[in-house]
Length: 360
Ligand SMILES: C[S@@+](CC[C@H](N)C(=O)[O-])C[C@H]1O[C@@H](n2cnc3c(N)ncnc32)[C@H](O)[C@@H]1O
Image (tube, protein in one colour):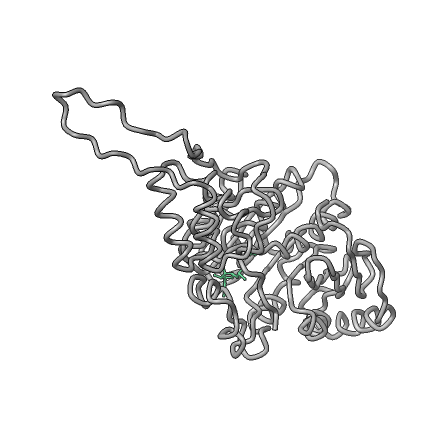
């Protein structure tokens, strides 16, 4: 099963850089935003709640089953602006909400990404997909004056697109999702970076002018097989929308729909990158090959992440001629099958394992 890490285990450090959206001023215990002292004539002011001591907060979180109670306590303390807000956040966390929904943000690829209730929480393993996309984007044979055209399909919060734009510098960035809440959230993260977010089914809402122009197409589609959704941690099952998780019978329904038309949207030499489980990767490779994309699999042992990359051949027959493209890709895939290297992806198809940091 392509299990998702528990949110509490996703948070590695409260030290973040380059917020993707403004972060509210933190509340620090002992530095409360108390109301000004009342004069005898003024109406009584409600006393601010006493700040929750750190040790008590850690104990409460631990008793509620939070494995990384100290880290979570620190994050809650540095995010809350008042003692009352802190108390409310602790209650929500103890009630089982994902930490990122309680905080209102998630750390992703060194960014602080806004994550609204009901929006998929970006997973740390997806940083591997970002690293692969950045590497391919840098190696593309564009003239230096032309920014890469990057599309984040099934964007959720827009974390992947925001990370790509930040890491790659000058890009033309577009994103899309079918869920209105995700689209609103992605706009908060992506608009400040100059990106545009569309609402609708896969490619349907994108401007037609993007056809044949996309250099990097990332699509972290839902890929949990339907009958395994019930096995996900409650934080995912209960607080993330089903449309963000359920990938159909074998988990690859949405991936197949993306792959079916990706070659028509990619620029020659452009790349499609999707995340799958390790078990699904061979099926995804078959699908990519069938659709005329040169397949390659990259694996991070460290992040337990698998990314399938499909490249539109730079000089291949047009995507409308699948038979020729199919033969070309099959031959290429056989030529390097079983190859295992601990390097970044090469243009040749095959499987790369890497334990190196996915960051560029
Ligand atoms: C696994 S989440 C990934 C979100 C984000 N890319 C990330 O990595 O954090 C999948 C996303 O796909 C969206 N989605 C599912 N089916 C879709 C469709 N047919 N068209 C567009 N978006 C879709 C969901 O709303 C959800 O936000």
